[in-house]
Length: 417
Image (cartoon, rainbow, N blue to C red; front, side):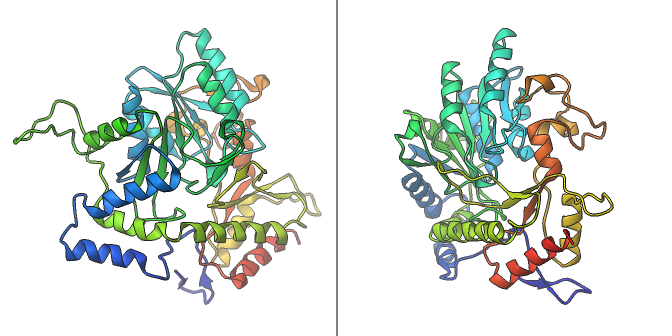
């Protein structure tokens, strides 16, 4: 996708736009759906996509749904989350990770990040469990997010949750194809989304592969197939097997259409190619921008194999002559003037007005109970608050050419002049 913005002759560079396969796999699957008149609901593409995802990721079942958000909601339903329950959730993420908690009338408790992965801090999680055990209100579930395709420390997180008998939901909406290697995998690589009791994938328009929408619920427990069938039942309005429309539970209209499933099936053919391109984009930025004082790329470790869905960078406190500070906002504004899309990193959920009434557990005990230092809730001294204040997402579209990347890096570098 390359377009010209009005009043600017330079091609517009997008952050992360859909990228259909050059081989037109998607069109073939969608054409088959049209030719057989299986447009909706469900159909062969849905069934085959579930089978293909299940085999690729190595999960016990995979349920095709309309969104990643609906997958989180059904995971909470399968766990048995009810009104008044507590659910721990990463704070540094998109609101969709936590909104389903409120759908069920439960209370989110937001957990700080760690500097070394930007994801949920095992130390903050451990402190949260101790705090809520003392209060006699242990969480019904933990939602851990693999942000921007970066793997969270699943060894430590799963061990902590296991000690308290707490189910885990992995929000892998941004990390399809990312792999983790650690003690719990026997030092073998394993895909994100397959560690917890349930995993979540998103096929939204800006994700690494897309169906224009869509999501997937991964069921990883020993009874995963049984849980998957329950999820399908709830996602199709909880209709009982009767000749008439019989309903004994509240259900939802969450199932994926056969058309969306066909697009995703086609995209699945090029997933590995898209991951390779995303990683190359990250490496390009890392090499070309490493000379800029105070600018660092998102963290990478040997036990992670990240899909690098979006390349994000962090800006330390750097000043030009005259004590003028370089800010992430300035970089974004300069990129925008050059027809280049960028955006801030996620604003932590504990700083969002809609969630301000809920608890937040920071990584640092010294900050406990006094994390808000800005009345506008723009930022605070938590780890994720500081990443938000200083972070920026750079264009990571898999259609970027070398000359596009050179143009982006030139604009960023000029901010230091």
